[in-house]
Length: 151
Image (cartoon, rainbow, N blue to C red; front, side, top):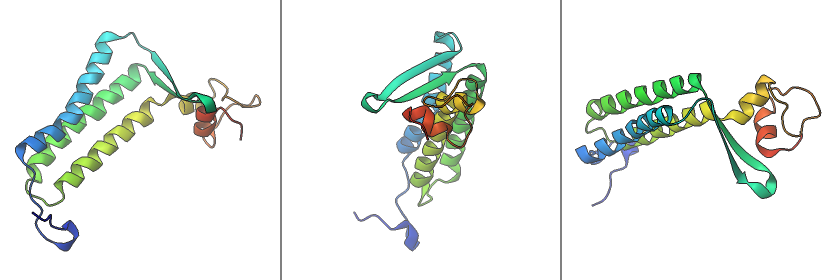
């Protein structure tokens, strides 16, 4: 069966209830993960992962009380939006595309909120790796904090 081109005005097959439930489970699982994190670990929680050790590239996450509050808001509103969009856009030809874009948006917000390297460097709390003694600023904070190289 050929899939209709959404840009051509044709009708794409609508999503089944199982597909909508599967997409709605994504933010619900994220919300459950945040609640599990809150119940299991003492805050603040710092996670340091060596992403590409040969180049000195790392990935640092910082989770404190404010970050947990924002994570609860992001994932809680995500559950509500996914649930509402499933019923409101029932049969719309680009419903799958909306779910994919919403999922990417939620993940992007979560990573931006938790990424600690640029935040610490931009706030000037800790000197940026590779800096020559001055406090970091937002212009180069993300690159300096992740690569460990100077400008």
